[in-house]
Length: 206
Image (cartoon, rainbow, N blue to C red):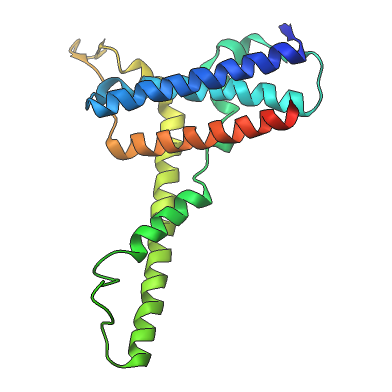
């Protein structure tokens, strides 16, 4: 067990957030160079730093003094992830973004003007369009959350599989497939949201 003063805990949180942003920038560089095979390592380290951050922030918000940092939260991936998983949720903002995309979908919202001359028919078309956009946003949001949960649950194994390993049955070398672009987008968005949230919580404490 390590006892940390309030000032040192605040400093540690700032360092964790800076480190998280650094990992995020590294991830952007890898994405720009289409090097997705080692991309998850950056996201995984970022999530682990955020787990420690949330652990310390919660104690500061509870006015604990000193802050208790046990060995598990300092070194164990599973414990760090446990302190972030419940906060790693697809936000209403991200859902709204999906809805805006579908509202602007050309086949459903032609830019040339009304589809029907009849005013009542055109009104019904617009209502149906809005309903379809909302349903599509719901479905895509649920899918994103399922993908995020899977990434967080399997993150440690994904990180290890970035390195070359050997099949225990055949002895053949392997490494994990590259992280798909859609999964990278979800992880990146959530990390950015969490950093912003934690920065605000830290400001409220400071």
